[in-house]
Image (cartoon, rainbow, N blue to C red):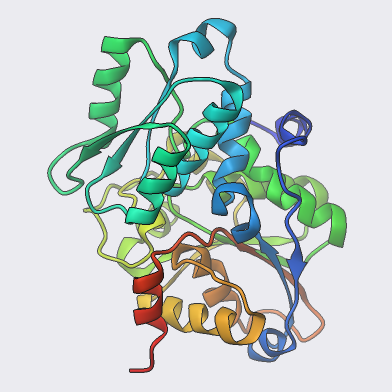
Length: 319
């Protein structure tokens, strides 16, 4: 089932009591760099540190009583795992999260702190979806994947819903892109509330599977990308997410890891906020854009701020 903007509005109501209506920040320096007005929707201030809590809570709350009793399983590089763990903790549902061995320690520890059972795997040798499904079949869990799920997509779209409700129409919206859940949800909202708004997804140069799929007209599978944007180390766009992206997204761009580091430095120096590499994808592209005029109003989704502090310090240190 492909969700629509009605599903996003329903999700907004379903999760309203637990979600943070995150701030929209501006920066004169960001506007100077972009040559336009940028509005940053700061999901790094969301509960569990990223937009993922929106979709996770919406999906958990949509479970039937029988599904809730059986428990939930998911797979995640970090942020979705944390979000599922917290959502299940709130709703008193058992959570099992399949996470890669190289996932940031802080993200693993956070998921564990919320009561999730962690199952590790080697992302270079093992299939996380296959592992999750084998556990699902054996234990009877309900699967809530990180992006290719109607309730997850609808929940993620509530970030854009808040943005447009506060700002009105926009000329463009830049959105971070891994598996496409956030981009698909935001595109549904933009299409309904600001039809002339160009929606642009941004993924790492090393992991441009969606850009390839967008050009080819069908999903493309790639090897596990080597990028510091750990939340976007996906190998294939989702079927549901791609259907929405194909219909409602204007373009898919890529940025380098170096651009992500420069964006992290920008946010720390100029806006005094911590943003993880994946969370910088949209901003890195928006601040270099030249397609829109000086009067343009451009929304930018900052997707999260969960980052290992030692590694963060190393990235920000001068060369």
